[in-house]
Image 1 (tube, rainbow, N blue to C red):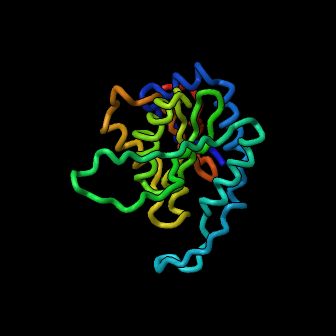
Image 2: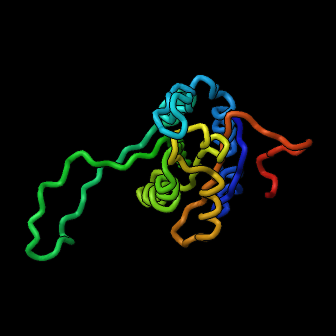
Image 3: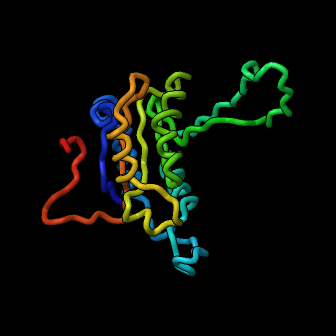
Length: 205
């Protein structure tokens, strides 16, 4: 796979390249090592594209794990003890389900990495909420989010969000004082170049 888009949220690109250059190289190497053709294993049952073979998010995530876990990246899971003191007076709740948790896909040192091939709301949650929570819990101080670009998302099940939409909303939302630096990478199964232009980490965009 290839890196097709780069967006620096809250100075994320500068922070990652200066603070974690070795980990960024590991992430780039992981992306380039993934053979997307092996992940086109999901047969569509949707009316608009019946029988079409699509990229499987599960298969793609498995390839990321196979590449990153041997290099010391680990998932971090935090149990959720949900508060009950904020219920309205007199309200008698049913028992809350036990075993709830929040999880970050990959963490190494203080760099958190999320790989998201799901709906738009999950992408926004990762950057605008989850990464801040894991920073407050002292697991990370900087983040990287990997998402598909539109061309790749078009070859997945409907409803999968994509880099271009995600970046537009983050750009218009702006940065809050609680946001952490996040480098957002849009990936595709191949790099489509026009002329001699190339994507180079660290160049201004």
